[in-house]
Image (cartoon, rainbow, N blue to C red; front, side, top):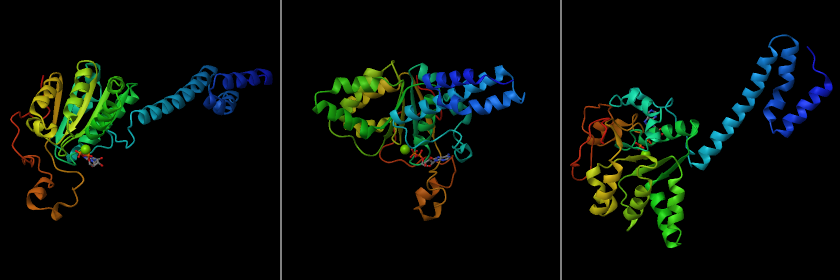
Length: 285
Ligand code: ADP
Ligand code: MG
């Protein structure tokens, strides 16, 4: 079967007009396969469209990852679950189904530095982008910095509206560095605006009872936790630091115990023990 040169010309022009560069690229190859009887006309159309769609999908994902500031890509496939036996692999894979995003829930990853909180948060965010959800990634310090800047410039409402747009907001590193004065209040305004309207993933190496210290204000911390624990899934990673897995011998005793990969050891913590203890992978509702 040979296509008439005039028809082929027209198809090429249409593909250019329709901005289908990948189809244009594969057209000749598909025609040759067609001529040799290796594929049917239907299969040729199917492959032509499939190639174009893959290209567009790849571009969409790339652009969405950049827009969502997901630059240091981590994947679930790249996560070694055997290193964190306390973590229920199936539970994480279920979370990758993204129902929590549809339900506007808050997913907390808690655990010591290096145990994979950021890795898992990013990997789930990447899954969300691939599934066509809008995502934005930030650290708590960056987020509060940007809210404080917007407040100074009189654009806080716009900034909060912008941060309410993504279906999934990841706030990484709620940790040892206390936030700037007034930061807890700014974060609360955002959390309150997103409450029951958009999903979040938060990562922290501080227990919830320590949030008063983190935010320098127990009233704000209580109000924050009221919103952030209402429709919440808490994933506590009990294991050791992946970063330090080859250097256990260089660490002081307590930390060395941490990095010897024994999940039954209680995680090292600073300050008072938290009042609110969450079991591993328990759902706080
Ligand atoms: P955290 O946020 O808990 O401090 P990260 O997620 O940043 O820790 O992990 C530290 C580094 O170790 C990252 O490069 C991450 O990709 C890697 N990592 C952590 N846990 C695992 C794991 N179980 N399998 C593979 N890589 C891991
Ligand atoms: Mg981290």
